[in-house]
Amino acid sequence: MINFVWAGLLLIGFIVGAATGNLEAVTDAAISNAETGVSIALGLIGIMTLWLGMMKIAEDSGLVQKLANLIKPVTTRLFSDVPADHPAMGAIVMNIAANILGLGNAATPLGLKAMKELQELNEQKDTATDAMVMFLAINTSSVTLVPASTIAILSAAGATNPTDIIGPTIIATVVSTTVAIIATKMMQKMPKYQIQHEQSKNV
Image (tube, rainbow, N blue to C red; front, top):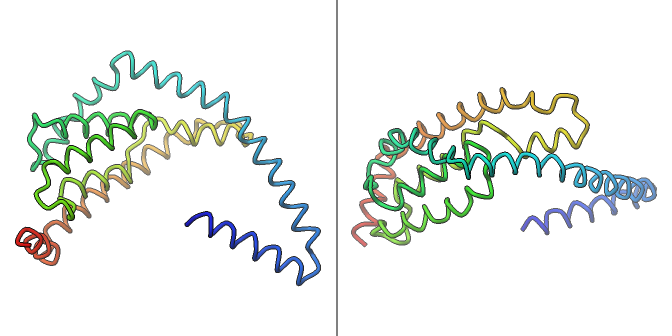
């Protein structure tokens, strides 16, 4: 779908440029921004390697596991309908811990595993459970302590202090995750969704 969006934007740009006599300016802008894109991409390599290396050390040193143990009491409350000893809970905890540390590459397979395990507990395979919805909400908002990708982009773009984003990122993601959790819990209690949930059980 996104390919069609970008293709449409490019087409509209060329049509407007041709209609207004600025086709050359559109072409020059496309070439200039293509060069900028390559420069930024090359600049990302070094900083991304550095941060991913640090995150890999954190993973191998057991820091992710320690963080997972730290947040486990919270996750057991948020996912009260998931047995504490079920593999789904372990995958959920590890996924959240990896996201907090900015380990996107490690978080993705853990997230897929968590959702697969949650589906095993799901009696209605075509309807998302409360635990699934909560898990997706937390993943979408995702508290992040080290926004490695953002730091890399800022550094590649020439920011003087790219790590200044860490503080605002922590505040913003804590707020967004809190709102996501509250919104999910409130919607779970709404009669509209409870009725749909009961109806799906009876099908």
